[in-house]
Length: 265
Image 1 (tube, helix red, strand yellow):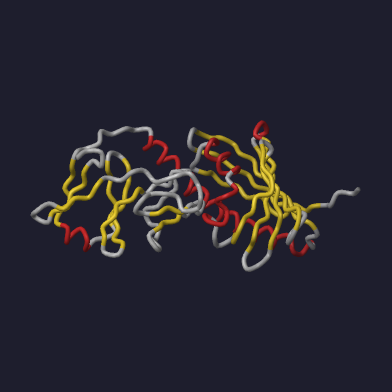
Image 2 (cartoon, rainbow, N blue to C red):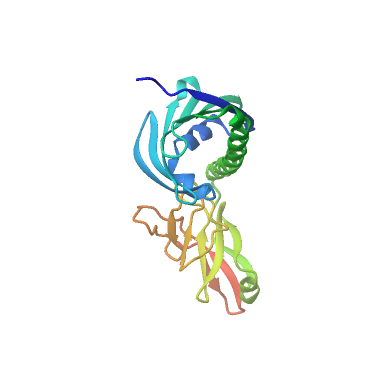
């Protein structure tokens, strides 16, 4: 069987503010594609995964679907994304990782396409480069945020007994309000008039919930789509996960709002 002849249309290079550990974690993380990259991908369904990488059906906007295999060669510091079925198949995108510093990695991405007319090589290369620049902008933002959260999780602060927030009416006027409690981030929101405190770090991969909209009493992680009930912290999609327990809200006789340790009387 004769292999298809692919044409090299472009090479994209950049420096990413992330360690190779975060980079490999990102490569294996198929689940984030339709959430973090929602303007490019509309869905994903995993078909297979293992130490070698993963294979999935990926929905593109507005209605196309492709099948992609991501094959990982950690020992060679590279991986290849192959479109094996659907628009653009067969095509290959080769990415090489080159560590520069503990939190800096250079990448080199080569785009190899099938059946490209000579007069379309430059335009095709420019389109892929533009797309991957945007995708890597989003990936880098996620990896930087995750590294910061991991560093924060390693620090342990003593839980205070109480903390004054101020007059309850002033707190309500400035909702939603993000706060820190015992070194962890939380947010105060109003649901049907009730003040509720919830953790703003997803327990999955420490995704950010601080700007997630509260819809029908729940929040959705913008990285992987995990949903949580704001009041209970319980996952709403059958997963055995929950948000970190929040501090308790109390209003004193003067109308001041306090945070207090939920484990104290």
